[in-house]
Length: 240
Length: 311
Image (cartoon, rainbow over all chains, first blue to last red):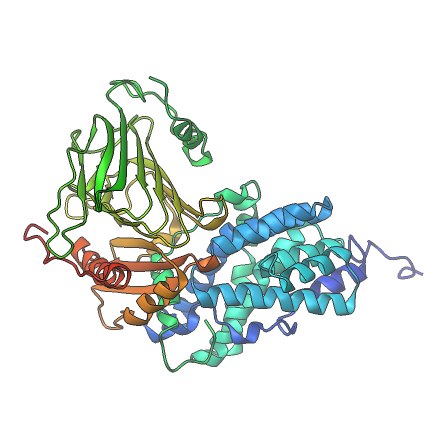
């Protein structure tokens, strides 16, 4: 019969591998991302974002920046995790936190990192993740989300491009789900924006894959003011 | 003359790879293009004095002046650039040390103009050390990178746990009233700052990298509607940082803002960062001055003098 033999491998690294990548990219993964808007709430309050086009540019900008700072730390941590170099993981973790200005931005980074480690350890054992979580609890390392993603995904056999995609997707979906609660926009529009954003992920990866940790760089003055502004606003839905 | 090692590290930066040609005029880092400045402040007979001064043109400091009427014990040192701006192939090093309990204010005489370039780049390395209980205000005037210029700067700041350092970087995106292509018309602006404790522990690091043609510059979340920005670091103990942050009102008008600003906490309880953007330099300067006043009042119990009439 024609259909008895599979025509190609269903997924290059196996179907369970793909399924687990989807699981760890899911926007409903309970690591607390629902509490954060990454500056979008302030951007709407100050008129920096007013409509779907503005939101689309905001997402593009955040992903651009996310790749050049957090993405670099993620790639370094992923390489260190694969090489069983725990001190390399901690270095990436500390370097990333050193570059995060704003108490709410720091909280977003470390709270979600710790929650991811707790969650991942519940579903699958990982000695390195266990050690990292113990170090977070004893304040020996900050516990930044991209580092947790790197250790978890390296443990699942994901290569660095897959880890990078999961990381970028997570940020985009977090902002867009916040947008649904903050502005007049429907699910079709946010999905259109997300679809367009996904198309740029390879360019972002290629732009940052060779960067050293001390080359993490950004330029976003208005965004940085928004981040500072949000901590002083009385009426708000999100933690940042 | 041998170049300081720190400048050699800068020369190897990735973003400079495309700008390694020699100028047709004086070669890069030739004598006369290497400015060096070393300033040391210490307590002598109950007063903070400039006890160490070494300079190589085009950088110049003449002497410390005690002319701050609101803080008469404060030695004030304006840095003078006799070259009239930074040219291609120039490299500067500035080392400032404050010993235990000393205070100082260091500024520049005018804007740091980075001239147009058709070869090479300009570089600057700064090392600032503030000892126990020290108080330093290092607030250079605006950096203005002209179109086609390339500038790389690195600042290593070492601050004792009970000391305060107010250090600022203010940038205008080119000579905006001179030419339509001046606004972000430079080839490269790379500014890196690192804050450490005397034991080497890193508290904060930030690199601002702007390369020509960066599409995000036009975005509303980056610089749309504004031409000037400032990052002002206040490295100070956590209790002082809390008092300063409580007093500074963030400012972000939603209708046609001239300027916007806010204060954020640095990681590792290092202190605070003022972020400001504005249409003109004076819009940003007003925000910086508002922050500066609070910092001085909270740290040293002194206010600011009235602003100079030429500002």
